Image (tube, rainbow, N blue to C red; front, side):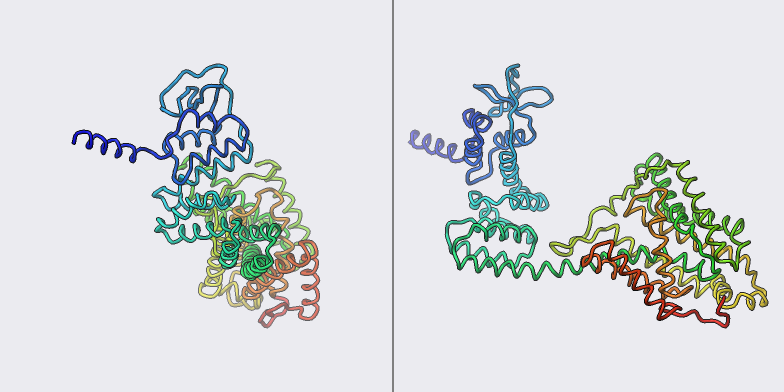
Length: 527
């Protein structure tokens, strides 16, 4: 009886022991020799289950280039100390120990082995990352582990990813029926990586029926991807249109109200962008814990900085040149040069770095080939809010009433007791402040430098003229229309020809309709 119980106890201990316990011979085989034999040892360790703790630690150390070896032993190196990979005990590191060299193929296999270990993680995000790693280099030898993980998976997103990975692995199966099953299933996935995988398999496939299935799957994927591309072009066009709207909105007020051809409008945007840069540095130095909120603080600062400069320009220079548009053009062009040189003297001629906060980094994955950047989404929302604020100001406030009155008939407004000079200053400062807001927004999507405004001033005037001078609704239609049209033409003819075609379109449109999309209403045409 005692012998029987001892036998049962020994059997239980054997069954409970790790199935893939690391040995010194395996450790040596994993680190020495040619790549093929090392990969064979790695697959042996992984086997049909996750490697044990010692094997996983050695694989991770190999991936981190933290392993040395001699003819007789392997050492994991941590903080300059050597550790036995089998026992985990600290050992003396011989001076003759050599670094393990991993080529790209070996690194890919090590990453796959680590990903297989992550499939057992309780964190669904880690498991999904592991599936993506394995999908980058499909290997049918890992299919049993994938199917085991698929059977145990509870998270829907990870389970779908595992199913797609399983079919990707089956594409290389010698079994024709499995290849057919995989081709039919992958046609509904619709991702660029799946398309690449199917194309590679199509080149190597010899069976006619499987080839037909692969081509049908590629057709389904193309039909799905084309919608992502179309939506991407539309979104990019709306994003560009929102930027043009922000840039042109202030110019629509100043040009529409006072007839001033303000060539320094781009430099007022630049001031808003540099104000954002200064606020960023202040938060980084004095409020590092609240750094992600610097953009919120930069919005009013950029508005006030640009508005103050605009008010000074209007009271100091522009108010003496009303009624002489060509002279305002020359004067504001000179002012733009002065502002650019001043910025170069203060901040240097090179672009300055403006960092996106964490909540504006990354993007929203809508489709497999369509990701909407958060900073672009934020600019669209921001432009909408600015437009709503300006429309409310113009339509519902006393200042807006005076601005509309002066725009429609300056002399009659003066006769009614409106201080037109003050309204001019307020309106010009408002337009300059909106330009500063545009600079704040542009700092999140492009470079900030002294020449920032030069890239947008021509487009801003085109939007204002096309939409109708002084018309907010026309500015909106023109900005969004030109943004989408420009991106559509870029995909067809390239960036340079697209710009030329848009310019030709505007010239023809203005020839047919000189007042723009919306004509100015009022008794005085020259107001």
